Image 1 (spheres, rainbow, N blue to C red):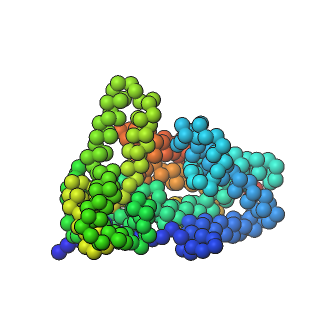
Image 2: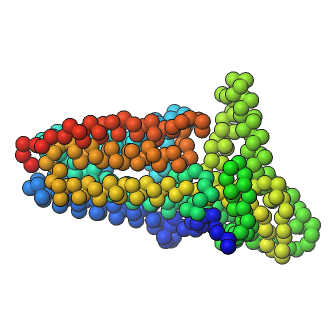
Image 3: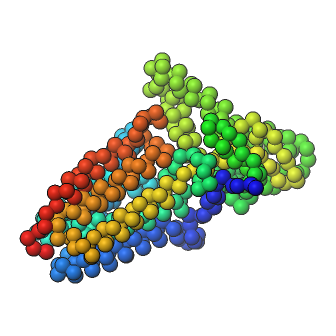
Length: 389
């Protein structure tokens, strides 16, 4: 009996495309915002806090999250790029936000909020805000899943996701054809390569005009298909890796060529398919071109993180309403940091590295999680019941 080694994730990030684009990520963000606002408002009412404080808290929280997340990404993940493109730092819409930066900025923004608005201990504001943040974190990771981004490591387990929508868009852009003209068909065959069993798919392309005559077919194969196969081949990747290693050995890693190779190889880390010598067995049937390729299923780390964050939310929600832990200043905040960033630290082992060398034991996200976990444990253990609510 044939057991499929992956789940095909063929979801378009856009729920609607028209005059405006309505994306799942935006919908999830809006849902988390509305639910979070409602939950925190109920807590303010429960503690007889002025509802007018909510509007100002929203402003401080939103600004802190956006500014902190952006600066965290800039300085911790891509400073080499932004150091030469300073004008792009404020361009949040181009992507690039880091949760660690957001966490630090939220602490600072709640300190400012407490000092200027509530006149209460900063932990009073944080203990409520983090419950909504944990809920939002799960929705945001589901948005990442819909966007086919922040991918996990390669896997041959049945839970692995093959991001078919992202792959078909990538192929369509290479051949300048419509996405609907690109299809992946499972062959039921897989091959063990470098310790992982990769499924073989037939990549089918609908190319108008290719079936005119044998000369047209030959020219198209040589000019379009062969360069595509070469570009995504393991042989090409291995040759570039060897060139990069030689340059590092000779201490020439500052050259423009080495930078281009490093950028290309980093891009391949998050690619969803590759080619081998078998891919040159191209079949042309009328206007259909079929290329055997190997697809790359990925560990569904976005889903794992979403579940972990929602579990944190449910525990904090229960602790607030059933255990009255809001009376212990800093306890909910400490649990939030401990749970969220312990989950992040563990799940990072199953993600593609964003920075640092691939042979590093831990990546940047894990290094940044450690101090936040320690800080969380400190507040959790040392939380004391406040004199008043």
